[in-house]
Image (cartoon, rainbow, N blue to C red; front, side):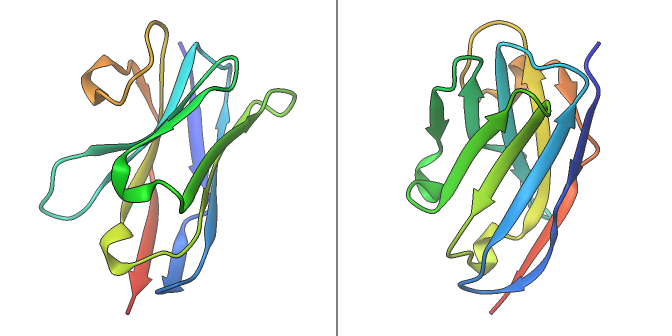
Length: 119
């Protein structure tokens, strides 16, 4: 079992930045960030392997950075140049094998943290 607790969401204006955090009871092989906007399906944003290899969905490349602090068991998502299209509930997730952005392969989920970007 893996417990995940997100924090760091909030309201910002377009062009602003936020850093999301996710404290994990333990890290698994693959940790990811997902988001779900109202009326839309949940989508993968970024993921990182146990050895620190990251990957991103195209819409956030160059703006978002996923990282982790093993000593603090904390996963981060640094977000820059935010736009209203980034408005969503953001979820931290974990899986034990493989590492892509297929949300159905993630076994553990946090409760989410809301990000709202105004124009």
